[in-house]
Image 1 (cartoon, helix red, strand yellow):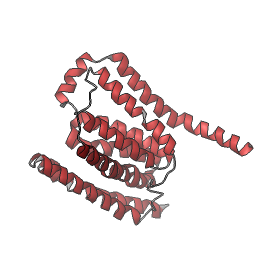
Image 2 (cartoon, one colour; image 1 turned 135 degrees about the vertical axis):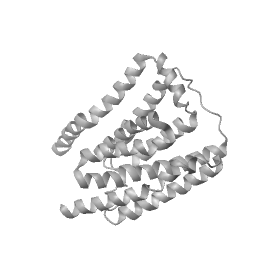
Image 3 (cartoon, one colour; image 1 turned 60 degrees about the horizontal axis):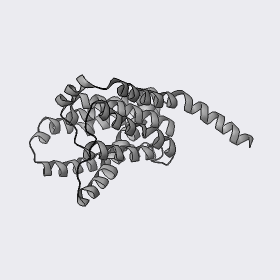
Image 4 (cartoon, one colour; image 1 turned 60 degrees about the vertical axis):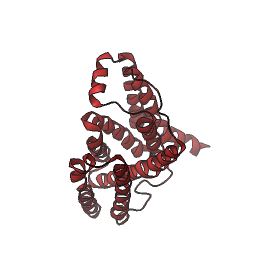
Length: 255
């Protein structure tokens, strides 16, 4: 146990070092480059994180322990799909238009590759794979769930602001809870990729100040429905899922 914990601490320190280049990037680089340069840099950044995850993780855990397996695919897809209901109902509650941006074939192919093969896969491997495993081995599942959610939110503050970072932390909390029960990140990669394509490229997000203005005319019943959906998923993962699986296993064994 002590050896496992020491390995986790070392991994956490290495993960922290891996994030250090992000400080000057958010303070200077992303604010002073063209859109094309930023897109190229983003691709480079994701390859950097992918290499870092494999380098740090493969020396301590196997791929299965990092969540790279097919376990819990159905659970991940079903529970993760609640995000799409919240995404659409949330825009409706804020009286925002539910209209998709026109897109070319070239952009569609780029988005599929970028958001699935890079953004979704790398971020899931980084947060729900490597970081989750390290925190779980260090102090247990509870820290792994909450720690990865907070880290996921902080990671997105630079590009989305405080409000966006808070929302992303909630998504990270849901994904971490799914990772806990599912045992893998395969389904999360699919949900993550689809969500990003719709939320980021499907329609452009409004500026934070515009969203704050919209909060004054929010449709509260719809907002409450969004809350109920998310709370129901959390409740299911926390309490109901293990009960259902226990009863299911008993039925299978009796048969």
